[in-house]
Length: 217
Image (tube, rainbow, N blue to C red; front, side, top):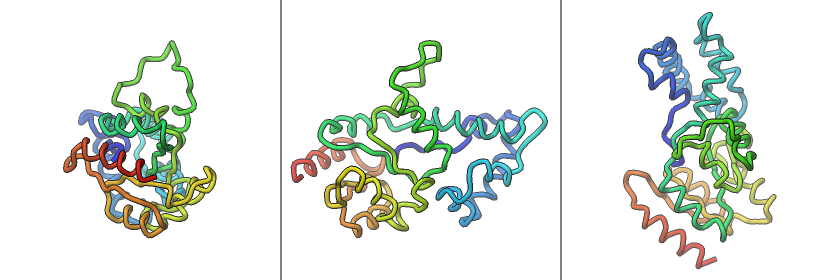
């Protein structure tokens, strides 16, 4: 729900890039292997491991370059600004935490960006709809690469440590997610859910549902 940007979007979005075709082919193989992709999402394999397995490199673009592309493109990933504005509007009354089934480089990039209290005056300003521009709008991140599980498989393991660290219980939390399996797992753990999809649901419905849940609390 946060973003639809693919990994290595700058390469995949540029047909003339020398790595475009070989990377597309290698990613097709990766995504067709559910075990390998799951291992990447849950931290059992690092992004460096995956890049080696992809085998996409040239003398000009060695494997470590592909890792740098991944980090840069995570920072530049396009986020849903309208949704984030709604979520940010309730931050004075609730923790707003990104919960993402995602890889190690995403988590590392997010935390690096969120830790920057002041922008670098010499650096170019990030695009207004990028993760880099919005990373400080959240209180924290819970990521599958760090928890070792994805949301739908074990919501207690995914969310439990963060909730415990903040003195909260599942009954104190609301998950806003676009997947029915994630919502079902969170409700089973004792939390409330709001299934919201970018293309099917209106922002005023999201805002109203958040207000209603906050008033109930």
